[in-house]
Length: 233
Image (cartoon, rainbow, N blue to C red):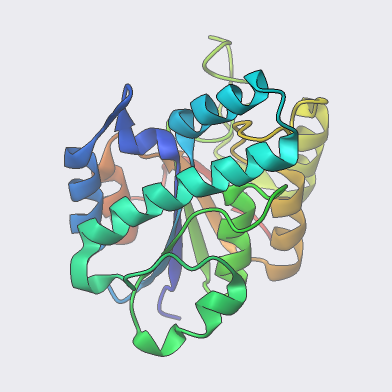
């Protein structure tokens, strides 16, 4: 079976500090441009979205409205990718699955941000992957995969090379907190994504996008021992 892939790229990978990393965006777009196996790209909001969300919270705005702000920022990030892909991308950011379905005949790479409040862009990536009948989802983050604890705050964190759905579910439950579903909260994986994975059985690989040579090697199937693979069988 020839690969049909969706890529989720964390918003943090599109910025260097508070500046848009146009060099990184161009590099990413040059890797996926002209590839028949890439169906869609989903963009996260990243640190910039969290800054806007925190500003709204300072105004006393509720979490649903903060979610909407995060969606706006993720769609702006998606527009950056669209412009980088030029004619290889569908020129508009789909705002719903229905919007996506109406434009499938264009045979372009779709680039999306968030879709609705309460849904992470990781969940969007799973939903789009399932809808487009993708057989692989690549999740690019600023860490090397899924760890038993936050590797940014714990030097003894251990990376999983492979996880079953059962182990992943236990990990999500163990790491859950009352702030986990807050607008803009960073999570590599969440419970909604897990439920879509259970029913769709999409192959998932989570790995670092800080060095995009890894992405190229994964796409060209020249490397296999990178990141964390979710075994959905």
